[in-house]
Amino acid sequence: MRIGLDFDNTVISYNNEFWQAAQERGLVAPNWRGSKQQVRDIVRELPNGEIKWQALQGYVYGRGIEGAVLVSGVSEFLHRSQAHGDTVLIVSHKSEYGHFDPDEINLRAAALSWMKTNGLLSGYGVCLRREQVHFTSTRAEKLERIAELCCDIFIDDLEEVLIDPKFASSIRRILLSKTAIEGDGLPYSICRDWLSISELIFRDHS
Image 1 (cartoon, rainbow, N blue to C red):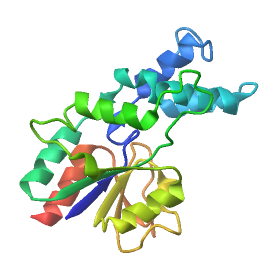
Image 2: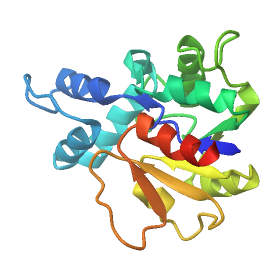
Image 3: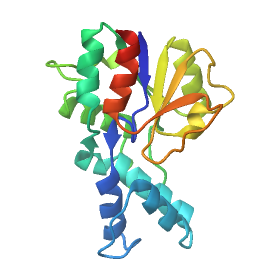
Image 4: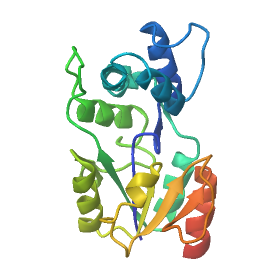
């Protein structure tokens, strides 16, 4: 099979980085802790909140990416996919540079560097080749690339990507979410973690 993965908040987790960076900038209370989604909701309510949120993202996805961590279960998933002879591809909607980032860090280069540091693009263990990692500038381009790569399955943490009318209907879609609610007629399956994703895919694949 050809299995496509989103990157941000699917393979890599920035949760701690977001609340820590928000604290440093005085955007949340000093002792506050929360998820990326919660940080976004709070910051956007501030004066000029959208600009502040985009600047925060630019820092976390760039210079702050060093503190991000591999999402639990991804490494085991990659081992199983390799054992099954599957091809794993990363397709990420990621601009080259963050908005309002005074350091002008190349976000794609930062992501690739993080992948190497965390063994996803290294010369040992389970790793991807550079040509298996794809960045796009818009969501529309991301959907086109997923189709062009002939993915059989695509895994993302954003429902709006998976329900987009332009998402190729032939591709099986999996939403990685701890809070999504099951419902009839959804075009995707819901998995709470990577262990559940592995069980779903490789149970059917065996």
